[in-house]
Image (cartoon, rainbow, N blue to C red):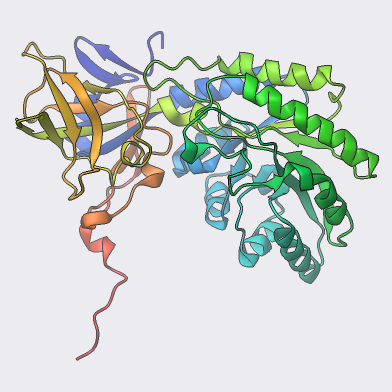
Length: 420
């Protein structure tokens, strides 16, 4: 393909070689559409930059956990980064390998730890001494030694939205930088743990390399101190968080980002350690769109509304973060354009998908909400008893349903009323 994964052909938006109009007609709306070619291209950008270096890539499952999406990456040789036992089950079901999976997250339950140890995960990224204690106990009960890495909070400002900043002192994540050395000594003293690495993650939708380099420099200083205490660090996990273009952002190119990080680590004399990258959004974000149908055009005194069949239940990011997603007509029409707020049918004033968008549309038209491959379906809900959207993967000229649309009856199938 010489054009992008989602582009216009004769005035009609296509996903690879399939018309978005035909997708909506066949599978209904709202509809998530993913491009296998786009997923493969972003993976190759990471993998290519890591080739020949001591570096590996672990896909952040939380960004998009659809089995088909995970399977595309598993077939390409990806590792995975999980934050729950449920995500581990998804990785295994999608063909991923436990021994190439890193278990992150601030609140791991004992049962999740047992399942991960039984499966043989690569490493636990641990975020507190109480979590170390719990993991040590669970591993001891199972007669195992758990591989651990501490997630250290470097107190670096990622210059991103407060809700997706994770590396400041005020965030819930990680071990405080000033406590990390002592925490490593404590971990090394626990009989059922094996310290193997160090981890940090400073935030999401980061569009500059500088915050990463600041965090890495602090992390490497700490590694040198930790090893003075007799604790060996075999790998450095630099986390994920690289941003994508939603509107006018200009994040660094993936290959350049990876090479810059690896070059800094090698220049500091730590090239003998393996480096883990944990991308999510930058792998899947622009590999997906959300198709929605325009139900009504509603003029108002202060603003005009384009009411669509998708809602905050389908795409939560605008309501949650005031996030911007480009919104384009699927079919380019020669009709007068007006400025609309694009809103959904949910009974909340916060149910909006785009504000003040200039659109040339008529009722019944299809709209494509761009950059919906990350934190889209995975954050969807059944509020207002709304069935969740279907998901489709396009592969060249073929379209495959990779998650069937929910039926309303499924939403309360597990509920019961009181007896008479």
